[in-house]
Length: 322
Figure (cartoon, rainbow, N blue to C red):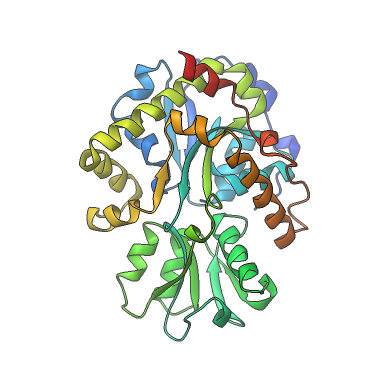
């Protein structure tokens, strides 16, 4: 879910925004459970039903998907709130237009034998992806325990690989998300969860986002995507087995791992977006930005003074009234 400095010269956003949607809207995403309704919407035809041609494009690393949106190879991105803040520091004018999900126990710090608390990570090797949700969770956990990133040895790995490094004994701890948490825990009874995103409500969340000019120029398409998402969330709640199987297949997890893992994810319908965006979410955005800048001041040079700075809610308003 989830750092590359991207030159502004690589952005083709003026051309992107001016291109009417003769081509599919490409949405970049990673194998994260919270993005599940996008795969449901694709398979159940909800995008087509709402008049928008969508192509889902899969990535593994945050830096690859953000580079793709910066270069114009994709138009919409499923992105963690903290990653969006980071990319705005990199000069990419991304705006979130829908809250997709929030993580509770589906993002976690895992450890093997000999480590039983965050404090015991001092001097240990910890695998996680820099600039991603795992980075944010790790630094929040360290700060809550009176520590900083200097107290651990960071091993940079994608979330999909961090758990494998723990299983292989190459690191003492790993920060990752579901379904990789369940997969790692199933390998060894000595593996344990040290800390989860449930310790701070709203810390780990994801948005659908696009460059600001694209949203302005393509309101109908963005509104259609929001409506399709809402239909997919409803379908998933009414048909948990069928919808769950679609998501499990997309992220490469067997149902016996997917089912308990998915309980750690809160999806947001259109109505729930309206409630969350009434103020609580915006306040959390400011807190996330401050924490990111404290942990990585060289990379996070600009943080939002208010959550509204990173949001464009015009399409949500349109979807709510149509």
